[in-house]
Image (cartoon, rainbow, N blue to C red):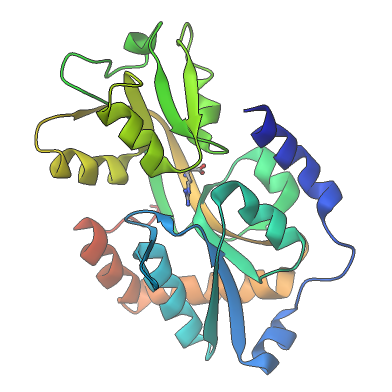
Length: 251
Ligand code: ARG
């Protein structure tokens, strides 16, 4: 927990003074460099050597529309924004909810989906914020789940895991009483576990966006335009249907 806080607070300081690649430079190179985690299904997942997921397909469709090839980098979730500020890639698409702390460190695009953080537990386990009183809750480190679970009055031990899937595994193994994660991930997990767990209340809602290095306005403008086009021409709806059976854009 301490580490996650320090990491974000240090982000501004860690930003290299060198400028990020502008839109003109990216366009000229013909390739956009994108980073994601690759461990957050169904949004971004590295399966063997193959990156898949809603965000991966959406970013690739957007890049195609912009006439660019994609060079992907995968990084642990809590390193992603640091690498962005070190100019290691042009933008990040990894399900970052927009919050004030992150917005001080990076610039966010218009949101590419809207969602919420949901409580998931075994039958008889806690399914509401009130029921989390005194309970052990597992979450991925560096996430808005951690931030929001810590605000629940009387919550018991909050255990952090390096990946979201490790936090889910902790719930299944009984090392925690509840897991808090994305509501769409939760729906898939409940299905896969066939009645062994259930999804409870949403703890919070969030708008999820892509991040560029602070001040990279030329790239941000193109990303926003590419996202808007994908939402107008049916590409977004098609990819969203494939992964969620519904359209997850913000309304
Ligand atoms: N939406 C949550 C947040 O903003 C979780 C994101 C986790 N993303 C990931 N690639 N593991 O913190």
